Length: 567
Image (cartoon, rainbow, N blue to C red; front, side):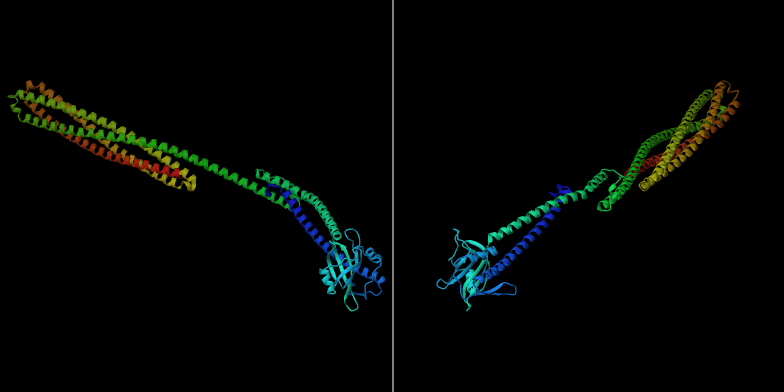
């Protein structure tokens, strides 16, 4: 609940509470001291009044002997007897001098009690209480012990502070009592008046102190409002404030100095926080750029790998077609060689049976026709082989372009890996894994370039062999054309065969030589086709290995991208 009050209210309340407690403690102590002082003064006054009463009665009773102690108080009263006191003037004189009540008691042996012979004590009806007994009690017992009594006693129903001093006979027996006393109510009234006075003074002092405390605390705590305002402004973000109360030489000034230092430290902390925020923003921007570069690299790599796989598939398809074409060329060259050998055998048979040409014109015509047909077939097959070689040369040119595209993809991949390595170096510690993967990608790109260069060399060698095969095919075509011409000449000269046997023999020998040349050319074509098949197999193996490497490259790129994204 106290937390809802302001510091000023708490401090004023505390000062008032402490002040009130101190004032109440002082007032209580003062009241206690005053009460004791009043009681002591009452007791002292009663002793004095007892002496005054004894002195006054001695004037009327010269035989009354009073003994005093060192403190001046009466220790004992002795008299031979108690007079009758025809009037009460003497006791009234004592009452006027002391301001208290006074009584002289006389001992009644018959009643064994002390009775009032002269007194200022009055009954309830206002008459003097003469003849009333003392009665049993503490006073009576003290008197019978011949001791004095000092204290409170009840007389006719009223409480008094009293002094009873026994009057002893010459033999030491109590024969009377001298009494003086004051009503307790009068003493209590004095006490109460003093208590009221002390209470009033205490309340006045509390009021004065409260006003002074409020004024002083207000003067002392007014700077706290400025302190609170300064703290609120610091908490709201204000910096480089002018704290005017920092020049004070008291605790408020020390608080002001502390707030000034706090303001400076907070300004420095704000600057550091701003720098950290800017550095963090820079790192975030760099990470975003890196992510964009990685994404772009991933897209380019996917496109490049797709193109690479497509080119590889095309290469494999072209290689398959080339291998099929080479196989067919090999079969055709084998057939052409068989036909050339058959033609050679026929020409030899024709030369061997030249003498029989005259008898077998029909057989020579048929043989010539067969040679023409075989020559035409060989020419057609050779021309088909030449066309196939041209197609193979075009396919090899396409493969060379494809290999160039693959080499370009590898170079682009190498450039991307180099860019990734540079970005990884910029990223610092977070890009080490990225740099390792980029290095592996670069190595794969270099291996791809080497493979494409190897494939290009094989294709170049294959092109040379195809060119040689094409040239051989051209020669075969020329030879076959000659065979065709010779066959035509043979057909035109069948009618003159008898007369031109020697010419036929010469032509047959030339045909034999031509067929041997065709056989040799067919063998060369068959060897070229076989070399083409081997080159196709090697290119197929290299393409397959290239396809496998491209798969590994794709996996490495995926691993590389995942590592970068994880970093």
